[in-house]
Image 1 (cartoon, helix red, strand yellow):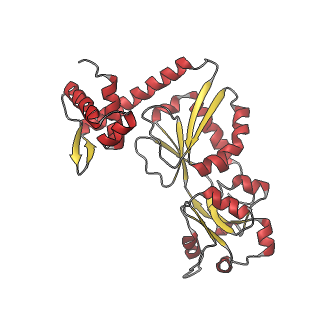
Image 2 (cartoon, helix red, strand yellow):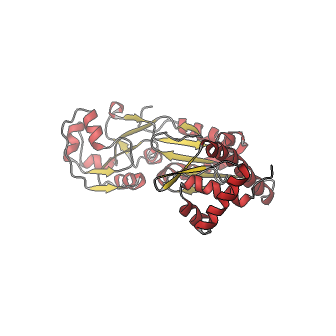
Image 3 (spheres, one colour):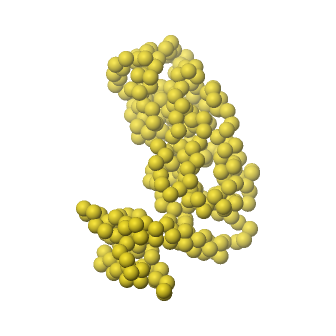
Length: 300
């Protein structure tokens, strides 16, 4: 059997990922008819349908699902081979994608530590709230926030993450907090991102029917944390993301350890084949060491 043209395989991969010929056409810079033509060519070579229509979208057939798994590894290897050929042999490039808050608040302040242990690796960091695709082989690992529901990848959950009320020492000197119910009368900062939010935290700690108008509301954890560090209120946020601010003393826990809520919010995600890459293994080992260090003021 002859090998299908690469452009047909790339069209198939894009349609399978986007579940749409139109979106794949936009991504590839082709017309929708050209993408459909490439899919038709590929199905002619294979001799079986790769998609069936469901509503307005496309769904992979069982043959299509298996073919996607097979070609994903091939495309990734081709990209790596091209990168190796174009890169000086002494340099290893590690491509990491994270959510913006994790990249800014946790990873960026620790780049010196990573460089000290891995001076021969160039770390390329990209941040967004999208779950990136590993099909093209561009990214080595992705640090994602949320519930671990991703298929066909390896998932390692970062340990010792807790959600807890945090404030600046100056704010607490001016506005002492005696117990959880007392927070109702304080300036609270609402964040949309943590897995545990204020109404859940109040319910967990016996503050019934807590209704509160927030002084600030943000859709990014780093904004909530920085606002709290400025002394403008109390944030309910991740001890992992706040670790540098805790270490500097810019933020402190409002209560003792019993008022923290353990969560599994951040996860390192990567294709199984990437575990064999030395740069990925070294990054994961370094990450484990850094996450395992005690966070000032937070019992773990």
